[in-house]
Amino acid sequence: MKQQIFNDYETLSSAAADLVLETVKQNPGAVLCFATGNTPAGTYRLLAEKARAQAADFGQCFCFGLDEWLGVPPEKNGTCHQILHEQVFKPLGIQSSQVHLFDGMTTDIPAECKKMNEMIRQKGGIDLALVGIGLNGHIGFNEPGVSFALEAHAQELHDSTLASGQHYFSEPTPISRGLTLGLAQLMKARITLLLASGSGKAPIIEKALEGPVTSEVPASLLQQHERALVMMDKAAAAHLTK
Ligand code: GLP
Image 1 (cartoon, rainbow, N blue to C red):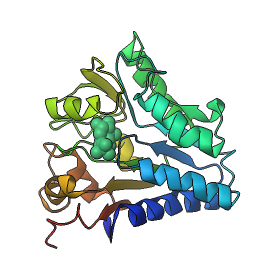
Image 2: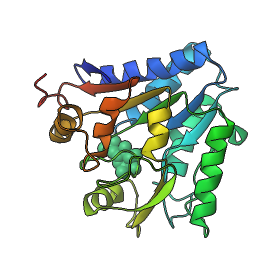
Image 3: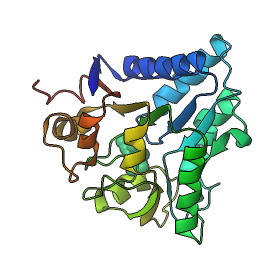
Image 4: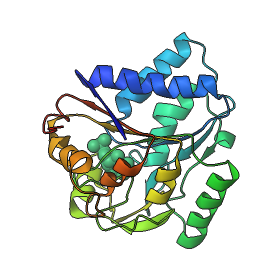
């Protein structure tokens, strides 16, 4: 695992956008995986600007969504579906045929997860997975205590995840569970890029990067990923000692 520390959110977001662009320039058919949340929003804004300025072509890449709220209609403001379409796919001209997202309205969770796992395998795995970190150390919806061996699965969400999750929706939305790619899939990604910004993330970043590798802090598993890259701003890195 490598770490990079940036002065502020804007320079962090710019560097992350550059890495996505570079990945697609080097491999136009790259398989990408995107998270939602406040942290990657700046990356997506700059990625759209840079892609336009550089006439980058995303026409051959393939994109997976990292996670989704269960039981929330996809068009609702705040779903991963709606946010990724708005912030990533539309601005980059990525067509629906180039995207596979979890169906949060599925009535058959095992089949939905199987479809995701098979699609990822069929595409040859993920080249670049861009993920964030929850206040309790989750990645996607891999909550503390999760098995490191899981692929796509449904997860009961912890109270802190539900509380921060509510802020993504423009109106109160009943949420309790999510669908997520598993850590086994993120560990196999050729690059797993974890973004962290702000002082609120400093305590969990310290645990994830400098604490023991434990399922109680799911992001700590990235310490064992040779090509994991953690990009963070100074505020998020403030508690690091090494
Ligand atoms: C949510 C999402 C994650 C995201 C995390 C952090 O629970 N499921 O994919 O990385 O929260 O979000 P934020 O960047 O808003 O802090």
